[in-house]
Image (cartoon, rainbow over all chains, first blue to last red; front, side):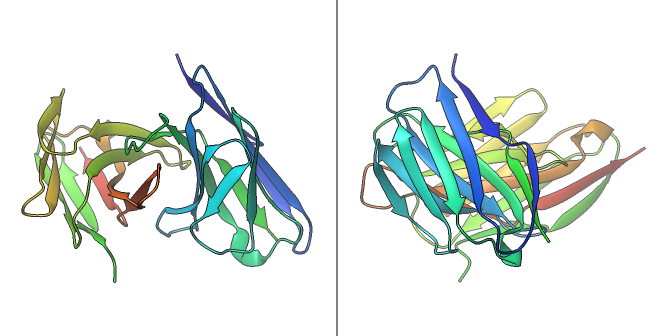
Length: 113
Length: 112
């Protein structure tokens, strides 16, 4: 069975500080991977997707970057946090190929002060 | 404009009542997925329903592609059904990846 793990569960960070959020998928090879973000009271929106190691496409510009260093790992990061980065970050996966059924991780709650 | 519109925005039900949540989309789509969002934010996938009708327990999802709509029916509501229901439209972005575009959600409150 596939499992998806996100870390950390929650973060409180200062404006201007760096950030790194992680996501790992176990039990599935070569998945498509996605990052989503939801501002408090807002709509979930896709930020990035990746179909293979080393390849990441940006969907929405939020002064964030993503990387896929391993087949089962997806990293979201920035060198300088903004207040507007606060919210809930979800990682998701789907089987390789064009697939619309996505499976979501437990998420990371980020508060930027 | 918003490609996915959910209605109603909120709903209060007496325990035992039925409810129908709607999701309308403004473009052609490839799939529809319904989620329950827990209070802490995580998502529970309820249905992946590109077309037709699917049922799971007291929940039924119906997607009619030609009419650009999908619905989620809750029968005999229970207090534990309270929460936010999200629909997400799957769209082929031209590559080997699907994009989910989410609606704003319907907040359901079931009272005794």
